[in-house]
Image (tube, rainbow, N blue to C red; front, side, top):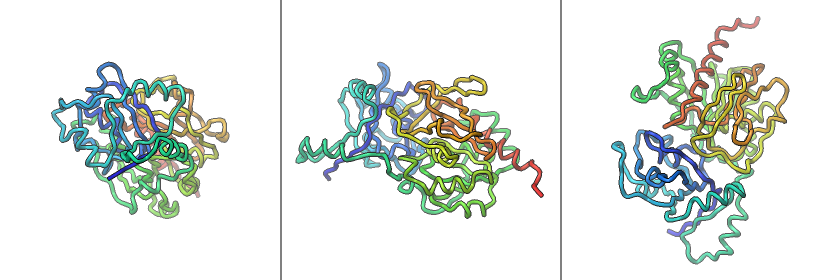
Length: 372
């Protein structure tokens, strides 16, 4: 079968990580839909990318949504005792295109200067260079609603929490022993590990489609509402913003990644496309109230413009690489949001406290006196 796949090209810089660093790059959530990822790292990077291979326990969704993976070398040696298949087998299973023997450092240098570029990978030799260039010029991620593409089609219940072997948070253990809070989670391409972390902190979760009406969500009488990560341009999903507007101020809400951008627009702010999308596992974030610096995992191409946010919204987190907004709270609307991934697995876990803060919001709401 001849295939031409056009998408954004990004560089993923990851240090050596426990569990499966490969799956952290492949990102089996829905965020990298329409993304071609080039892997680059320090000196030992090529083996790090492929030696860990794939383990079924670390999947973040039912399939890999990456457009393609680009690497320098493909190792034939597997060093992970949990491995169930090689990179080649995994890509074939999920119909993910792959390129090897490319100078990914040279590619990264180009991206470092120009920002995210469109690219095309094609197996049809009859296509001329001019045709392929035209394909890249005619493709854009701006204005594409990808949430409806990757979202679930019907509501479902989620039960699984983080397995005891991997649980690292004393706060989660304490929360799980307390009251259960009912959370409705909007699926914009939600990662399984987000759901696991919510469950680990004592939440009973109902997942609903991206376009599920706000009135139906409120009719479930949840303790809180969660807006998930996901791919594409938040401005292309006005239905999600409208639902968020209807829920704000009624129930405590928490948004991650795409959810952060959707809430930013629902607050009254605007979003914009980054020249350099944030991808990888080592982005420094400053928590403004205390000055604490967190190391974060990120995977997004759009950001909230803090200058457009209304009075009452506090920017709580700043990306120290480029100064962009990485977190917000809106106390009057019972809302909090962060741009990166606190659930990151295999890590870092610096921001896992966000789940505890969301639970604390729901506790406070439940303890508040009922208005007459």
